[in-house]
Image (tube, rainbow, N blue to C red):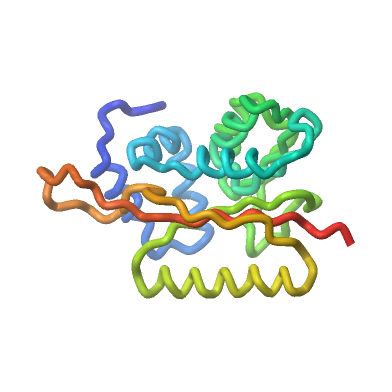
Length: 204
């Protein structure tokens, strides 16, 4: 159930409570977060679902009504709710959180929903078509290291012929920082930027 009294600082405190969690603890954290997930992200000005859907639709030349969409880490079904407005109809969702899958099921948009903790477990669905992903760009040493290692892996997969790069887009004001802003009178909230990547899986 949504809580209209929640504030940005409430969400920041909640997110900081998960620092240091292992994957299983993170899934339990997401289970507890599922009901207010979209509301909290809206408070944090989280634009990734809207930006990703817009980015994908501008590069997609097929028939949305015939496309098969694999929504990896589907969460509450936010992306599917945006994509269906553009004519997409066929969705399979994958997430590691049972609570999130329950929220996604309530949308009535998914033909199938699968529970899987990605990384330790393989993707429980065939891969293909376009792959659209986004990441936040925190201005920190760990954030920079992650960016370098991720883009190195993306480049290796491209060199191995597993997929073809379609587009990369930098995103301004991806979401508010999760660090507490101690100056409550400061209306200029700090934001993380982000990056979106779009690849097309190779046919051979």
